[in-house]
Image (cartoon, rainbow, N blue to C red):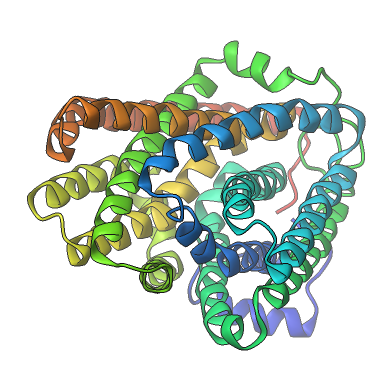
Length: 444
């Protein structure tokens, strides 16, 4: 991605990285920038995530459907704002604006927590806000990655870049555990805001290189144009994007049902917020450790050798296993084990494969449609699934019954993975052929 001949230091780094990933010398700087940016983003999020999960239970498990619905409504309100930004500003200008807006929010919450104002109300707002923050900043990050890397590069490099996020997910809870009790939440908020600025600087360097460099579509310095709801229109007109929507809805539905069961098991197994926070933090640490190992040494191999479809299908198969295990043994130990396995496979295989799907779509879809899919669609699935879970529980259908009802959807999910993989391969081939015909080589 980054043009120019690598220097001596970069050549040394390349030789080290090439042991874990298939990497060309001229890609080294771009890979490290992507890795560092994602590490900073996920570290900022995971500094605050255990607090969010614990606070989500302050009002009881019964409040979770309302919190998920509030998150969805917030997403709906923000998508037109994001659409207006992307229509009027080029990516290298609106990306820093988005991240710095959220950094200011973090500092505001830090001040509120430090003063102890309206703890229950602030806790609920914080739960909703962090759920919005997580999806928005990660969606924008992967839009920049899909914009700057080709499909072939994505299969080789996205797993390693995702490992940067996992490293951040390991570092975040560790910092929270060390600093929270001694210095309080306010310091965690300050660190999280600074980490967002680190991500901004990394992404600006990547986008600066792209704007000089022969990638497909308008350079990062040009506006994308279109209306504030252009993302919705793009999705409605494209079966490939609609397929990604269905894939993510199934993922969201399964994750929400498991999250609600997690809430019931944890609420019954631990009596206080501190114990619950510790459990969530331990699960996050285990997920990050396993996912990091897979991302560094297995993701690229599986995606390149077995294909995008296999990597996508891992998630529905792991979900079925999780439903079955929790239906049979609804204990804290089993919950921890299935969450670690399922989430690790998602982060290490399904997520990089899912982001590779966007490398072959038009530039507007990479930012506009992708943002709608990653935010409104995902949280919309959360909201609907949350109320569905509450309704089924009220009717006396237990978690085992929900798992049985979800099984046919899991079969559809696997089939959809194969279909998306075939489409992605076809579009990638068409894009490569077109570039050869136009004599416009992509920087690699």
